[in-house]
Amino acid sequence: MSIRDNVKRVLSQIPGHVTVVAAAKTRTAEEISEAIQAGITHVGENYVQEAQRVKASISFRASWHFIGHLQTNKVKHAVRVFDMIQTVDSIRLAREVDKRAGKLGIKMPVLIEVNSAQEPQKAGIMPGEMFSLLEALEGMEAVVVRGLMTMGPFEEDPERIRPYFRLTKELFENARDSYSSNNDPFVLSMGMSDSYRVAIEEGANMVRIGTALFGPRPVP
Ligand SMILES: *Cc1c(COP(=O)(O)O)cnc(C)c1O
Image 1: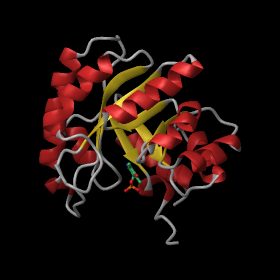
Image 2: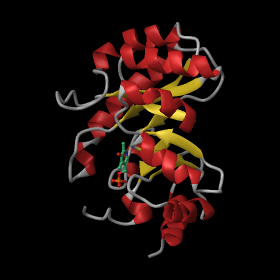
Image 3: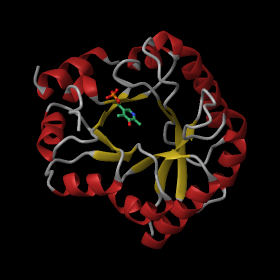
């Protein structure tokens, strides 16, 4: 199957209110261009420099989302490259985004990343701490909270991730009700190639899909 066929198939299976972010780590500018030409409108990248490089050689328009772990010292570049940062999980990181976006005179849409399974080694804010982070972000000038993102635990069987998607949906609804700084629809980003169907059933309106569009990632 070509990337083009994969994109067409996945997009045809996904309800219209759900945005597909093509998770493009390790993919070439040619591969990403093929996906965009086949209908992809949002591209996700995990590394700032990789994104800078491929983006520079892609002539098609898309919205670029940062979906990896963001180091504070990369924020300066990230706010120039990306249209949204999906992985804000601390006040420290948010402050840096606020400062760097502020210097450019832009607003930076962000999602709060939730560690929905409360795994010690994983990125994301603990569910119980989400509201204090949200409150801190509300006071920031350049950071605009647009919703939540979660990875969920790694499981072969996507049914085992369902409870964590459900929990994140509940947090999402509470956050949406209490955070009213803009009229744009709130985003709930969850679900990957093996789990996006379950995630959409549980309320995701954005999914991040790599393998199902581009094929298996080459083993380094
Ligand atoms: C790679 C990645 C995805 C997509 O994973 P696939 O299993 O290839 O669909 C989604 N979200 C994040 C944060 C990723 O790093």
